[in-house]
Image (cartoon, rainbow, N blue to C red; front, side, top):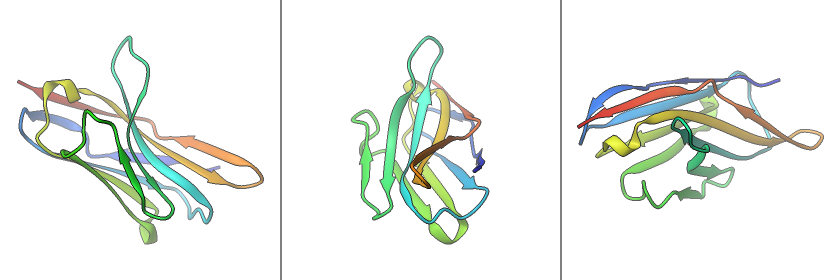
Length: 118
């Protein structure tokens, strides 16, 4: 069992920045990828950014050039640096971990609220 603990959400004005963190409760040796998703009421959860075990990154078109996903392997932590935030970025952000352990495994964080005021 792996638990993911997120932090760093909050209220920020448009144009501001926030950094989200997600720490896994133990070391995972066969990570496929880590990702950040977000969800607003009435909408499906959508992927924001991904990072593979090899360090390759991917971003949703809506956040390209503004958000940066990174990881600190020694701390079992993934980050999401969010810059130039807009009210459209307001959502609950979820961390996701996908790894191999007798099959493909998946875990989610509890979510952290990000609110961007205009």
